[in-house]
Every structure is written in structure tokens, then in C-alpha cells.
Length: 514
Image (cartoon, rainbow, N blue to C red):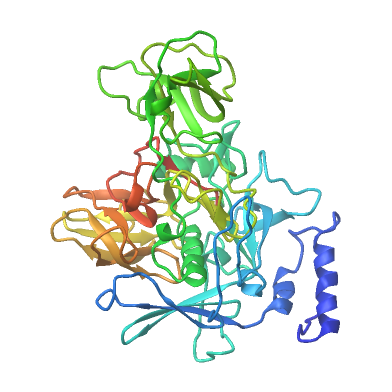
């Protein structure tokens, strides 16, 4: 494919012809020359946001600079498409694709949205396909500037040499002529994890379980991690000029309801509960129904509570019962069930695909703490922690923790990563071993990993996410980020849980395919 200058109408028409080729059923994305194609579209525009140091202000709100200046972006809903001044720039172009990972760790697009072979649901992995994208961080006297472009050397700042974003590298760290990042959290179909829409997201994950699950898909899979987090954070910083993700996208973090049934019933597809106890349950949310068999309070970690009657099912209807005193909550369980006086209904992490009908590139059905969100095609905030497939924490002393990233290393490990080819990204000294609020982060541009740099004061300031440090215990820990459906203001894209060993699998842990 020849190089095409897009600076005039004639050549823009050639670009249109190329795009039409892309969406024909005969087009094979796995064989296409993406490098040349994206090269013809490159603009070299530079999008930047300046943030002030925490010592100057704790607002977490930045100032748009360069080609971002004057741009406005607001999250859309499934009913209203809001303004997004970035969406027509090449650096913000994306489309959904199906992808696979070969044995060398290369993420290969196999179909793109619009083709007859593309599938959003079922036993496929859905990704977001982007041009090669670049980012950087420039430190200035009173703060730091986040830079983003579709060119390594942007037009307005040829002195900058930006870094290829992590989602544009394969699982061994090698550059690709495009970027692919998983669009959804993964659910299970016939024992295999797939990242597609409409699935009950596989919970009770752990770092070890994720590695085992990825091995079933092929040698090159490692599980999504820092590249997915980096993608979401970058577009938050650039499009919404904020460090605090929950100020724009709260996610399902105030969505914690566990209710005992009002009556026992046989062979039903619903539970009857007090109307006043409905709480955060709504039509379309995900719940589990189970019978509490212990004297202790119901806990989603208990097998019965989590799954013995109806496991991770959607609420399909809520109707008044018993003259309005109670309500019946109907679910799409695979078969009818019988409840007892000790049966509970519990909200659970949301199914994938709740954002499918959001009208813009970014948005959420509702900004209410009960719904997931989407940023640049990637869905998140489902009410679960994300188990990173390529990051580990080493609490080597009671007060010092090191963050490692696999960074393309051949060696998989669930023990001390030092000396095994993993990259030591950053460390943090926590003299009191207490939980802290994150104000600012260290960002490793090569891997996308981030770690606390400055301690904050609350969930409303700076980044405003909680780092649950793990007390004084030592050892290797899973890198668990986002927060769950109970986390409220502590949650966010940077929320971090340092308590769990690599084999601990909880009801609120999920993962994505890569």
C-alpha cells in the first residue's frame, strides 16, 4: 500500500476508499498492512494536560495544553450522546475487533466491527484496535505534563520523544504496528475464559488462577494488566483533565446490597423481599441467590451465598407484591429454585457489555455508583478488582513494597520476581504500614505500571484512591486494582489492594484476556 498524504481532498478520498476496503467481508485483518495504513493517517498532533504538584494544589484538576486546548468532553449515556471534541482526531480513532494471541505473544486482529465475521458475543475475545499511540510525561517546576500523540515526535514539540504505549506492544514487549487492548472483563464458556459481551464475569479469580486459565488459551497469553490500566488512565488524563477517575466515572462502587427474603417459596424464578430493602438492586444488574447455612452473617465468599440457587444472574423484572409491602425480583436463572427463610439475594459484579448501548466513545448508563463505564471503547468499573496478569507486589519488609512488571520476560513467576527478568518499576516506603490515600503516582511509560508516589488526604482530593497496604505482613502479593462494589470513594482506576497472596481467589476478583 503506498504512502498517502492526507492534506488534500483527493488523498482524503483515497483514505475513504481504503476504509471501505477494511469493512468488506473479503478483508483479512490478520494479513493487512496496518503499519502502512495507520502511517497514512498520522497527524502528529500533540494532546497535553498539565497537573500541578500536590504541594501546590490537591484538586487533581489539570489544564489542557497544545492541541487539547479548548476541547470539551463529557461522558455519554445510552440515551444522550454528549460532546466529545476529541473523537474526530486520528489519535482517538478506534474500532472493535476480534483478536487472538499467537504463541509468540503477538495480539492479532482476526475480524473488525462491521465485517460479517465479527462477533461481540460468544466464544471470542473482543478488543479495541487503535493506531500506534505514544505518551510521555514532562516534569516542570510546579508540576508535570501528560503528553499524548499518534507520533513518536509530535509536530508542536519535536524536542519530545514520546514512548510507545504498552497496549501497542505484544506480550513479549515487542512493538506492534497497531494497538489492541481487551474491551471487556472475561467470562467462562465451556471452561475457557473469553472477553466478550453479555457474559457473567468470571469471579473467584487469583493471579495463579489467571495464569492457569491463560495457559488453556495458548502459550502467548498472559492476561491483561498494566497495558489496560495505562490505556484507561491516559484517556482520563487527556480527555477529562483529571487525576480522579471517580469524579467522572464512579463505576459500580456504591452497589452493595444483601437482603434476606421475606418469605420461603418453591419452584420460582424470583425472590420476594421487603420493598424497603431493595437497596441498589435494579433491572439489569447482576445478583446471586443463595441460602445462608452458617450462624455468621451472610458473606459472598461463602459458596452457598455465592451460587447454590442462582449464580451471577441478571435481574429481569421487579414488581410490587403483597399490596406494595414487598417486591418480587425476577432473575434469568437457568432453572426454577426453592428458597428458604435463610435465603439471601446479593448484588454481584456486573455482566460484561452493560455499556454496549452508550452512544459515545465514553460513558455510562447512569452516573450513580451502580453501573459500569466505558472509556475509548474499554469497559470497566464492573464492581470487581482486576487481577493484573503482568504485575506483582513484593512486600519485602513490613514497611517497604516493590512493584514488579513482567515486561515481556519469558519467565512466569509467582515468587520473588527479582533476578527473573521482571522489571522493578518502583518501591514505596510506608513507615506506619497503614492504609493510605493516593495523591500522585509514579508512572513507568515502558510498561504502564503505576505506583504511589505521594500520600493524599481523602477520596475527594488528587487521585483520591485508597491503597490497602496489607499491614505489616510480608511476601508476594497480587496487584489488585479498581476496588469492588463496596469500595465507594476508595475505589478508582488507581485503587490498590496489597493484602492478597498470589493464590487467593475471592468473589470480587476478575480478570481480562490478553
